[in-house]
Image 1 (cartoon, rainbow, N blue to C red):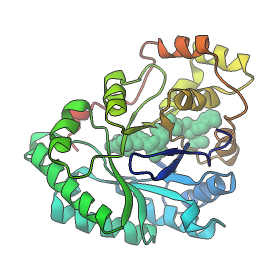
Image 2: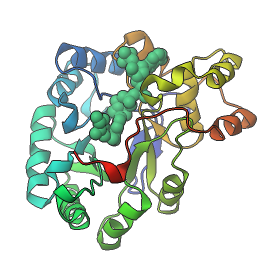
Image 3: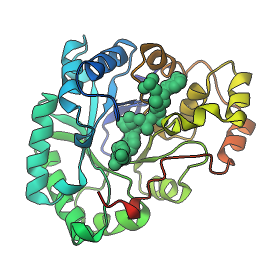
Length: 283
Ligand SMILES: NC(=O)C1=CN([C@@H]2O[C@H](COP(=O)(O)OP(=O)(O)OC[C@H]3O[C@@H](n4cnc5c(N)ncnc54)[C@H](OP(=O)(O)O)[C@@H]3O)[C@@H](O)[C@H]2O)C=CC1
Ligand SMILES: O=C1CO[C@H](CO)[C@@H](O)[C@@H]1O
């Protein structure tokens, strides 16, 4: 791999650029427009957003204002918890497309398995949502469909009845938070794993062990974390609104983390994270 434009292949043959640009907590309006433009100028061709981030219109504006052809871009969005179910999914998808101002989406994910009682029968809800996803996929509105924050016990009931198997699972993944069981399950089922919060929303950046390892390569901790995801074959989605950091986070192809250092990071215990537990999400 030489750049953020290099791709991995999803299980349906669609190419996915190996580093995506995150947009959660990127304020709607000019900040989001400029952040997306800065990312596209820095070479990113993969943008990760969601209806829940309340910035899809600005993300779409940034895409349109940048000098990149649509077919060179890979855009992901996610369906929010309250919008699951066949009819609501169809309506939420159209809203997202209108907000983004796009004709088709590259990847659409169910944001959370969201099992709390207030949602009703979560297994049936996810299955009917998936039927809508499958239809949109077959109609060519979405090039790939997948899941987010699904663990094996959430995936199994959905996959048992699915006509089309998920292509992606996007999960929290950073040093000290590797979700090995979910990653292994995805490998066995040819599902690509994406890393959300690859920098632990910034929490990784002051860790002394990571600082010392990054120093050996004359790289920042952010670059180390992003490279570490790639070497674990998990697709990182770093977020920044700061142009210099956006560029820095794409410069991860001129070094390789040694086997020993990979092992040392892989063995790290919990050093902080979102604290979000899929089975406890009730919003
Ligand atoms: N599916 C899901 O449920 C979830 C998906 N996501 C996705 O994953 C993406 C990334 O996760 P997120 O939690 O946003 O954050 P990251 O782990 O990417 O960390 C982003 C934070 O680190 C800072 N930062 C970024 N690069 C650098 C750098 N080189 N040096 C110093 N600081 C840096 C940013 O600051 P600044 O912006 O000020 O530069 C920001 O505060 C999200 O944006 C979203 O797209 C995230 C959470 C949940
Ligand atoms: O993508 C996300 C960003 O953070 C939110 C929490 O506030 C999550 O709900 C969501 O998964």
